Structures are given as structure tokens and as C-alpha cells.
Length: 323
Image 1 (cartoon, rainbow, N blue to C red):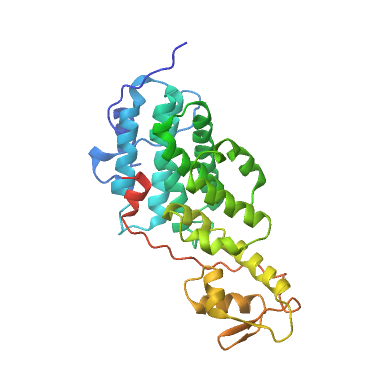
Image 2 (image 1 turned 90 degrees about the vertical axis):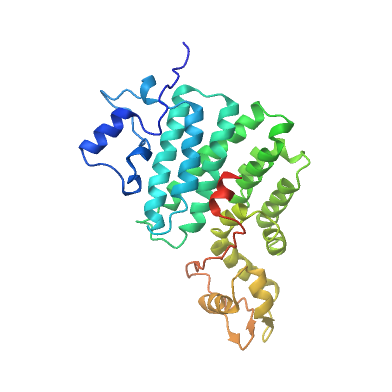
């Protein structure tokens, strides 16, 4: 049986637009009635999702992604948590339409990358939000669903024309899961490819796995901004392990280490954050130095969450859409 093909040429099917307007379910980001976007909907009795007139063909899906990430993502006068929830829901609807229609691998390779980059950016942007405002685990779940799908597609159907995208996605998957042996195994088919980005990602992940944290600062600053986003949310755990490792390696009474160098190693924005981190783990700070002592390091306290500032050289929408 052939898959159904969508014929809806609008971002939101007419019947949904009418229904949501009548029930006052129009989102505050849909103030323009001509720019409403189809909501994600679960299949239920009496709710058939495969009707052609409510399904958007791939060209409309791609245009809708561009609209969401060009015009909605860049809004600054509304809290980002509201923007995130809106875009996340509409992107799930886009993936749903694509899945029902069984779009080709080539179409998926156009649809999924911006969605993956959006979730990577959101992990960083919403890092300091309360869990009731932003669920990082659900965001990561959506990220993994999309990126594992595109990696499987690259294994089945790729050529030289998609190499750069392949390198970006595989390396992004690796650095999102630093030190994860299972992810490295899934990346094995791509490691032999001549990609500097994948080699850096693999080297960094292996280094973290083996407790060699020296490569973190070196590699982090050479990676694209979207890769830095997903590494930044892992920094609390990495910083803790780095400090603990250094306290073991440099352990000696009255052995002080320069705060300025430690700031670079821990990828902090400024020395005050490094001092705060050291004091959090009960290490003694003396002026511009810290005593790295195995006996002083408190392993019982929770990780300290300090956000790493990332400088975006261009508009975030251009990074997410890769334009």
C-alpha cells in the first residue's frame, strides 16, 4: 500500500485554523492569522491523522521549519521558554507529518538537521531554567530521536554530496555524549572518513572516557558554536571530575595552582567563577592560587552549575538553519 501524500499547502490546515480560532486556542505567537502553524496531535478515536488535506508535503514542511527558526526563534520580547515550547510542539508536528507520508531519505536529510540544531541550542539557552519551565531530559530525548534517525539514514543512503552534513551530525552526536562507549560504537562506521570534525569529537570523547581532561580546553575552542552548546551543559560534571583528578595528581601540602590557568582548564568565563567552584568543593583559595588537596576536596556536594557563555558570530537562526 502506497503511503498517503499530503496536499495541504498552508502551514496550518484550514479545519484546524477554524477549530482553534473558535475555541480560542490560538497561541500568542500566532497573532498573524495567516501564519498559524499546525499543532502536534496524538492519534485517537475519531482523530485520523493521515487525511491528505491535513498533511503538508515536504516542501511546505521545510518552509514551515524556515519560518519557525527564522521568525519565531529570533523574537526577543517574549520569554524564551514560551518560544521554545511553541517551536518544539510545531517541530514535532512536522516530524509527524513527514513520518505519516514516509518521506524519502533525501527529504529527511533536509528536515532533520535544523531540528537537531534547534534542540542543541535550546539545551544551552535554557540551561539555567527551572525544570518546571524547561525539561532538559525531554529536549535531549527529542534531540536523540532525530539525530539517531539521521545517522541511520547516512548509513543506508549517503554520498559525497552529503558528507559535510554527515560529519556535522555524527560529531554532534559524539560530543553530546562525551565518554559514552555505546555512542562511540555507533559512530565507528564514520570514524574512518576524512573528517577533522569527527576526529576531534572522537579524541575528546575518548579522552574524557580515560580521565584525560587536557584535551577539553584545546578542542572545545576549535569546535562550531552548536557543538559548544551541547558540551557546555556537560561542564558541571566535567569540571567536578577535572578538579577531583587534579587534586589527586597535584596532591601535596601547600601545593598551590594558579587560578588564571585553572579558569582556562575549567572553561569558566572569569576567575571569580573558578574561585566559586573551588570554594564549592571546599578547596582553599589563597589570593590568585588554589590549594589542590585530595583531603580537602569534598566529593559529597552536588555539581555547581555555572553557565559557559558562548559567542555567536552570526544570528542564531542562521546557525540553526545553516545558511
